[in-house]
Image (cartoon, rainbow, N blue to C red):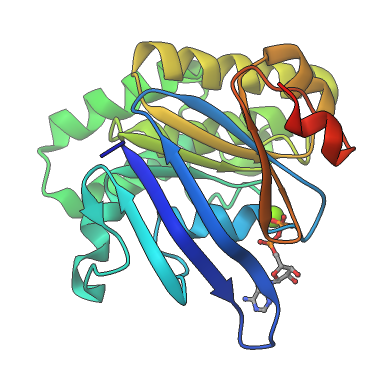
Length: 237
Ligand code: ADP
Ligand code: MG
């Protein structure tokens, strides 16, 4: 079994919208994968399946050997500890410092104070923000805030990092910096990264695996993909 397996998955929301129809996908450990597609095509839904924010109506999902669909609610925290999540809107806690925001997910783990400090500073160093550990989110630029979110996502050295349009609110130069940070983490921590985006420039420049989804249907999956609009261009490789 691959590191991530999605098998014959359907997600129909209560309002009748089919956000995923017969989704099939496997991703190896350590891969960097883009999920692309227009707004409302089902990208976020696909990602939510991985961290059990949504359950499929039908089908199977495995992450790192965990049967995600069958996982009891009381065990979901165990899955989440292995997954770092980065969103478009930073979701930092405004009253906490950079340091405290990054330390936050570790506090429930029962780690020693000195270990928490070591891990937090290491994560901040990886994203190039160690010197701002005392700052508050409102004192940081958008790019810096996103770096804090990435630090928070990796503080636990997760096996998987899920990024949902992480550059959606950033200008092109800042987006490039954020991508450099994510690529470094993929190389150094060997975390698998699955990133939803509709940023053509990023996808075309990086030549990573590209999975394209439209109206809830996975329409192409290419090893060194590009962002194309036409379906037929996506099918050839
Ligand atoms: P994307 O991330 O590509 O923009 P989403 O996965 O967010 O797409 O949404 C796919 C479709 O499912 C859209 O039509 C959206 O309106 C619908 N949808 C998403 N979440 C919900 C929800 N919680 N309830 C009802 N419909 C939803
Ligand atoms: Mg989305």
